[in-house]
Image (cartoon, rainbow, N blue to C red):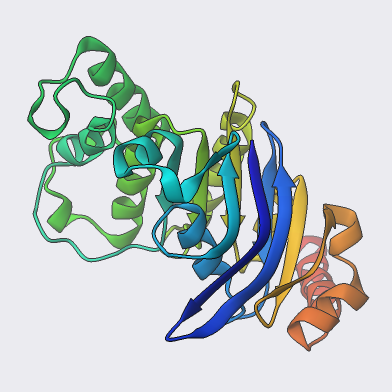
Length: 257
């Protein structure tokens, strides 16, 4: 359902992302992992149609560069780190914005019963039913991120792109977000691409992992094949596996105490 072929993305005439090629099937979770500055966010923005690129990006066989914004909103939702608030809408009104691409009349249309049902289900999924009437300017960063998750779910896209979406979430909601999206991607015609720094969350979410380094693909494959001590050391230039094992040892001492 997604195909990238020799994709390059740059700023000011210099390529930040170079020669990226991969395919992705429906019902798959792909995690993109790598150090800061390796091009992960840039890649997501190009897939979402927000940045120009060379090469080809196809969604269900159709080129992204030929799609209008409304068509893209029906196909792709981008959930990024919490951004600024420009208007203090209610939680429910903010989530309803995810329906505009599907709403008859767009921004000026009245929500249908299906739109209201989609918003209701999204509020339930993000644990926001009790907060639906609150102004988003009064929410914590974690609450606001859950609002943006609900808005992405209300879009009913084919692909959800995650750009470090758990940064403002406490541990409970981090795990719930990852587990919910693993279930969501099993629906017909759905898929998830996640950029995550937390290796443990990436392992929990991913079916496949793409390791990036220096703007290029270092390796791509099954989780157990990618998260090896050698591969992680090459990508991050540090002993990631050793750190994880040291952390495990500390937890074992806590549990045994």
